[in-house]
Length: 156
Image (cartoon, rainbow, N blue to C red; front, side, top):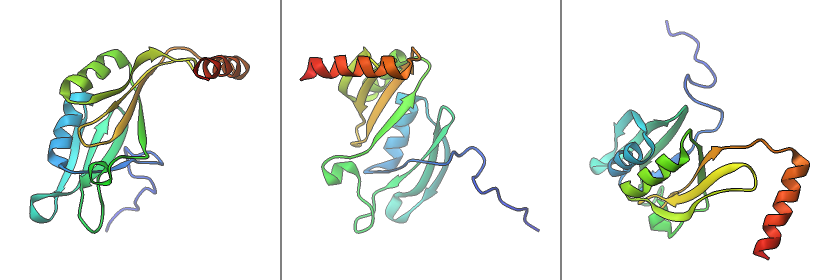
């Protein structure tokens, strides 16, 4: 007899990103090189594609699959993405440079941000946007508002 399943499977959090990519096998290899991902599961789909896969980056699981024309499309097929995945890392500099060396394009260079993170953005070879950060400073809300106003004034 099967045991009662947990409402949220072991290892998952409440929200789990699901990425659609143009070449899932290659994307998994990229995420391993760029972000130190661990492949957890892979299920073949039609025509040699991957129907579903799961990787783990840090303590978070990300699901992914090949695009299936007429059903799901990747950012490359759509011409961009409206989604960004924010990764908190112990050493953002190391991972940022490793991601670029693995083939990511720099969308925003690393810098220390007013909200207390060392932060940068890359776009992976499959069109997904990644924010990479190491939290450096806890800031009280009033100080954060002042810093945000000063940062916005510089860009105005």
